Length: 378
DNA sequence: AATGCGGGGGT
DNA sequence: ACCCCAGCATT
Image (cartoon, rainbow, N blue to C red):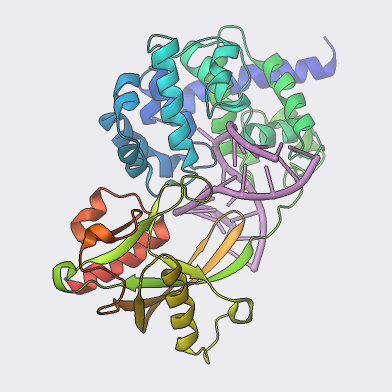
C-alpha cells in the first residue's frame, strides 16, 4: 500500500471511531425514518444545526409523515418555514413529497436515480438520504466535507468549481468504510462543524491531525481555496405601514408577493424602491420624497394612501441584495379609491390584526416591523 | 459556469 | 465588516 492509500485508510478508520464517540445527540439522529432525515437535510442546506433544531421539531410534529405533509395546505408549510429562509426549499419539499406519495406509495425511494430526481434534492442531499437513511455507500459532499478533505489531502482547487466538487465526491466515496456509510458521512460533517472549522481549526483535538497534509504544510487556515462572492447590491426602499380606520381600526395593510422569484408567495408590508438619487439615506431627507414614491406606487395598485410620519428604519441582507428600509405610517385617503369595503381591495392585499400573524408567513424583516408596531399599539 | 435565492452567528 | 453555513434550480 502506498503512502496516500495509508493516509486514506487511517483517515477513514480514525474518523469513524471519533464520530461514534463524539457525535451530538440531534433530533434527526434519534431515528432512521427516511422522511425525517430528508426533512432535516433540506433544512440543513445553507443553515446551521442550532438554527434548524427547533424548526425540525415543530415541522415533524405538525407533519409527521409523507402523507401529512403531502396533504397540508402550502400556506401552513410556508408558515412552519417562516424565518428559516430559502423558501423554495419548503415548496420543493412538499412537491417532492407528493411525488413520493403518487409514484412510490409514500415510501422514500432508496436508489440514486429516484432520490436525485426528486425536486429540491441535488447531489449532496441525495447522498445524505441514501447513506444516512439506507446506509448506502454514496458520498454526501457539502461545504464541511470539502473543507475537511481539502485540508487533509491538501487540495488547492477552487471549491466553488463544479469539477472540484465532482472530484471530492469521488474521493469521499473511496473513503467510505465497508458498511458504515451513514456514520462516516456524518462524521465528516461533524468534524467540519466541531473541529475542522473555517477559522482557527482545533487541530490539537482532531482525530486525524497526525496525517493531515494541510497542517503538515502549515496551510490549515488558508484552505479551502474559494473564490469570493460578489457583494450584495444595495437597495433603499420605502415601506408603508397603512393604519386602517373605521371597520379596519387596529389593522394594517399587508400584501402577498408574486408566485415566483424573491420571497415567492410570502406576505409583506407594501414597499417601493427609492429613486437612484435617494438611494443613500441622509439626515436631510425630505419626507415628502418617501411620501410621493409610496403614494405613486400604491396608486398603481389602485390604492390611495397618504403617508403621515416616519416610523422606523430596518435593514435586511439577502445573499444578493441589501435592503435599507424606511418605514412610514400611512392612512387611507378618505373618500378616495381605497374602498370602505374590504372586498374591493386588490386580491393580494389584506387587512390584518395581530392575531392574523399566526396564519401568514412573513420574511423576518417584516415580522420585526409588525411585531414592533403591534406591541407598541397594545 | 454564473446567478438567484434568506437569514443568522462567529470573528 | 466580512465570512460562512449539512445546496439547488435555472439559465
